[in-house]
Image (cartoon, helix red, strand yellow):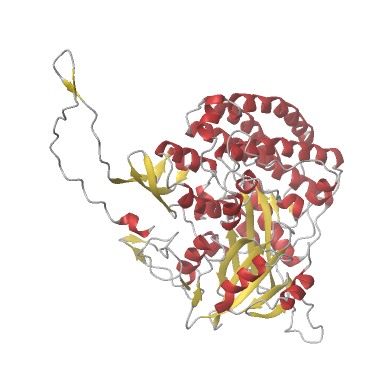
Length: 408
Length: 173
């Protein structure tokens, strides 16, 4: 892919000869087909482009309408999260985790907290675990709503975007009630959660679930099975199961290719083991229903179905949550014993991994973040060549990339 | 799903290339105040030069089947330390188990063969690791900087990294 940076030779100017087969029109003009020779043209998609969902630049080489090469350029939003992690105290780093995948900040808080807790070995109160689960799943719904709404927007369906923001607004209001913030929550803390849910909050979550189940059918009918949408996404950007595994894809990108793997079920953390055993939810998979297995439609389908599965998990948690403490016995200045741990959790975009190493001091020795978008975006360089330029927008959107996370 | 000891026994049984030893969390010595033990998770130590062969061996073994390279990164433990740690984290989709791997890469000559042939997922991780720590991955198909600008000086995640005073006329102080 390095040769993409060398500019192509300009085509030679030609004089056009009118062939004898040319048709004479009544007006006297001659009409004939011209064989147009095209040459490679490099187009910068981004850093500011609606389809890249942030500041990502994709250098695309096109021959007419056909993409012949693509190169992903990252780093426009690099904020040195890992270096900051080595310079601030354990608890102080928590607000920075909100900022990498800003659409699922609760899940990021959770991933970091679990990693530090794995080194410390603290016990989490039951109520805190269930509150964490409810918040993580609510945030998963919010994140998938954006993924699905903006994907419609990318390929020309404007209305679903507003439908999605209607429900997401309620989700954000719920989070505002529990922690005061709308986007960067820092609610899930090391050792539990920041505070208990206010009076009536759990009842409102239940009401949200009831309403969402009804609205979900609207999304499904409006966009997912819409004929125009299916035409734009089926058989486009096919990721075979082998390719998905080789590129280390996770989350809906992996399940869209038909691989039955979900960290919540297969490597359970928190209460998910219990929830999976009770058979509360299913793991939706791409089946190539509308086109080929692993195409863009399958990935969108998996995300949309996952929202409903999250609702089932929330309902289960609401059914068994009881009063109790919400945070364990955690000192103000955290001292983490020497050691290291890697914890991967199922984020809306895939496996969010935190590798933390401590030498027993107040700050981390290493705080590594494995962002799922960073790994998922790598597959674009393989997917783009050979597709049409218009389809490349559909392919980029279907990876559901969040630039805050690829660049960290 | 296997636990760490079963995985380690299997690694010894198939004679995984470059396998050195296992490091398990342990309690501190109550007699010795300086020994605080080690918390967290167990990992295996391997030779960095054989990392690619190791990954292929554990990927193709049916009982281990570590088919996803979840993470590839490095750690600079201390300015005094002679080695970087190369940290690899594997995941098996079929069995649902994980393996943490560590390899010591000497700071004097930080060169590791690229692992792209074993897992394509290594590509972006290697590029990030290379710019952040200055570790060269020999055989990486596109070894440009990925997050940093092409003309960035130094390797930011090294412990002895000095923050730049300015960058293209922009003051950083």
